[in-house]
Length: 102
Image 1: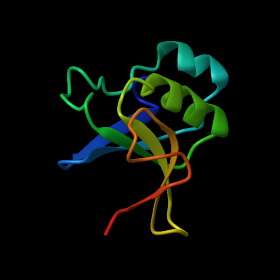
Image 2 (image 1 turned 30 degrees about the vertical axis):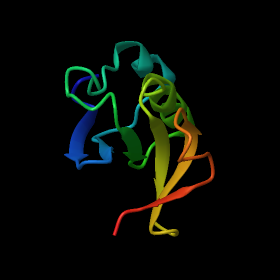
Image 3 (image 1 turned 180 degrees about the horizontal axis):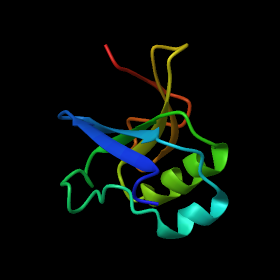
């Protein structure tokens, strides 16, 4: 599994972009061995997370749950030029907000 998905982090003061790149097709069983970048070890647990990459919807579901403990989670949508918040634990950012990446 470690060779099938590469993760790259792009950090700033407000959020971290967790970009993933699939080197080959993955199956649902691959989730059992998947270890994404840890927000505590990587020091971004107190920030928002933007997920970016081409992958199956169940991979996004897994990653959204994995990063649930961060301030908020959003998914990048290039058509919008930003990321759509899908869950939030802070009062100033809500589901449906668009985080600009300009």
